[in-house]
Image 1 (spheres, rainbow, N blue to C red):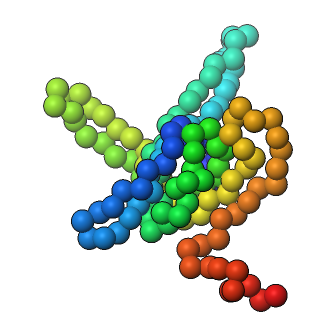
Image 2: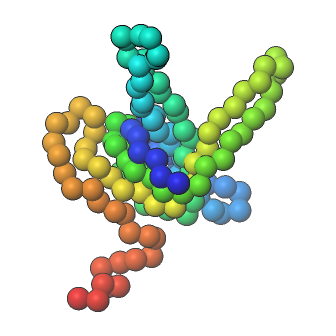
Length: 127
């Protein structure tokens, strides 16, 4: 599955007790539609929590406002809070990241960049 959205806050690297590291961040997916029989556009924003495992080198680039295209798999979490109210969230397990341009406030256009998988270095290139 692929999602494209803006990062809502700077990414954080979380260290687990078993030594693994996960980069956590969230994105906002913006959509708009015009309801039947209405002349007004409605804005719909969906927030998705993202996890990128064993790729902590990405964290400095995953900053608030950056437009990213993510590939991976999605899951849904549901629970009840202390007051018994039903809660839920969308969680996305990222396998690849493409950066599209800069932050929202910048008006530049750039070519999408694919971040190589961890372990790939310039020495791995065939030329």
